[in-house]
Image 1 (spheres, rainbow, N blue to C red):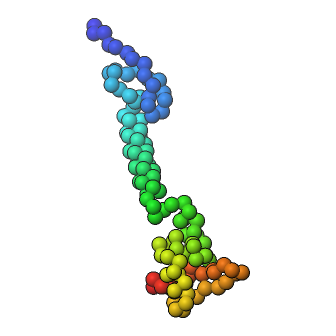
Image 2 (cartoon, rainbow, N blue to C red; image 1 turned 180 degrees about the vertical axis):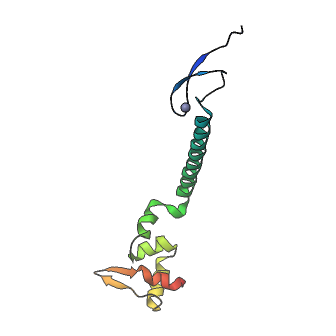
Length: 121
Ligand SMILES: [Zn+2]
């Protein structure tokens, strides 16, 4: 009678202890094997997405400061410079030429974001 090796192993998917017939067996059943494979594939995809996000985050266009400006409805001249990559001179020229309407709060020049989006439409 042949001696059969019996190796107690823990299923990688469900954590159940089972007796493996082969040392390479990692799952208690084929079902667990399949399910775990799917989980791994999904995690791989998530990991990939996270890495893509990280890459995007390091690009200069998505600096945190730009993001906060990006959600503002009214921009200061400095904000507009940073957000659209233009000089203060350009901003004042646009205001002077009437291409964009700006308001003043005290000494601050405030420009509604819609004035800028209007330029691009
Ligand atoms: Zn299992």
